[in-house]
Amino acid sequence: MTLTAGSGPGSGVTTTDVNGYYEFLGLSAGNYTVTPSKTGYSFSQPSRSYSPLSSNQNNQDFTGTPPSTFYIKGYVRTSTSTAVGAVTVALSGSATTSTSTDSNGYYEFAGLATGNYTVTPSKTGYTFTVSSRTYASLSGNQDNQNFTANPLYFIIGNVVRRYTTTPISAVTMTLSGAGSGVSTTDDTGYYDFTGLLEGNYTVMPSKTGYTFIPSSKIYSPLNSNQYVQDFEGTPPATNYNISGYIKNSSSAAISAVTVTLSGSDSGSIQTDASGYYLFSDLGAGNYTVTPTKTGYSFSPSSKTYPSLSAAQDNQNYTGTFTSTYTAPVTYYIKGSIKDTGGTGIAGVTVALSGGVDISTATSADGSYQFLSLTSSGSYTITPAKTGYTFTPANIIISSLDSDFDNQDFTGTTAGGGEQPITEVDTVKPAEFHFGPLGAVKKKIKELKEKVVLEAQ
Image 1 (spheres, rainbow, N blue to C red):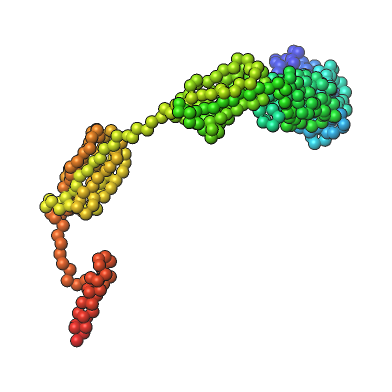
Image 2: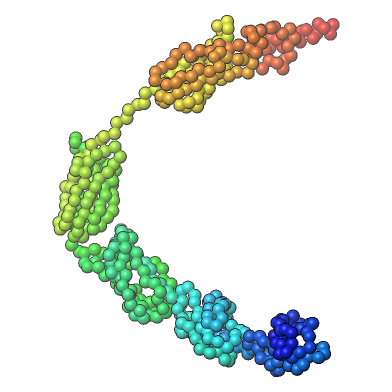
């Protein structure tokens, strides 16, 4: 709301609140005009004038008429009137927004003011008729603004050698019918035709000298995606073989040699028990044959046929065994652990760390050993047993490059001397877990006799 002063002290602007209320306060006597305005609205009284303003003016109301709005709505369906849901329908121009068709294919844009608009549908795997609709000056509601969705399909498959399933590359695949196109098989024999509208189509393979089964595939009509649309090809009738034997210098057969064919065709086989290999039904072309087997070298290392035009027999190779096993050099570490009186201490855990991490225990005479050590690195030997300390605490071998004997330790009990041995006068039968059975029976008999005497 704009207040304009004619012969008063001032002017001003205010905005109606949520209830449509406005006011101008503290006005001095004078001439004023009040004018309402809002984009798109018209008002029954364009302004009110006070000439002069000499008293308070209440109920100075205006009636506004909102702008006229319109809608655009319609359906997206296929040519057979099947609804297409989840189509993105974009509105651009005087307003920008988008919506998606529901399960019935319905869309709507409402509350549109007069202006210029364009409506465009889109969905992956579809084309549309028409591609968009334009409204140069929208001045009325737009019903039945429909679009026809045309689903797109594909035809994909492989071309392989008959009986062997070896891929055939460079096959020309020709599409004809409702649409046309050419695709060429890749190294895996794969081809595809994509983005095809519903209709009648024929796919036909061709390659010089080859025959195919089937000779073509017909889709009448194409109304779904077509997977595994494969063809089998038979190479030209004039084919050749490459064969031979692989033996050692003593003419002994070498079996299980992998023989690889590359070039105009490819594949691999292994020699049989007689060393024989064969590549058959090869068309004219360029080829290389290469034998391989772990531990062998071959002479020649490969054979090349720059333009195969005849059978190649006796394409032989000589294999030489090259691998020899050399046993690794090993060393040992040995020693003993005894008390200060020179008696071996059994059951001491001896840990070896460094090149390897292993452990052993001393035998009854206190000896220990680590055998077949292959690493030449640094090692540390550390003994341990509950109740004992050892001198030295460990032994370090900085480089194990020979056998090491006499890696000895001295063990001392926690009390500082040798472990005392005392005879126990009274022994319960449950304490005899070890020892010869006769000794146990004898001790039990003695205990029983002692009990009888004490009872008397």
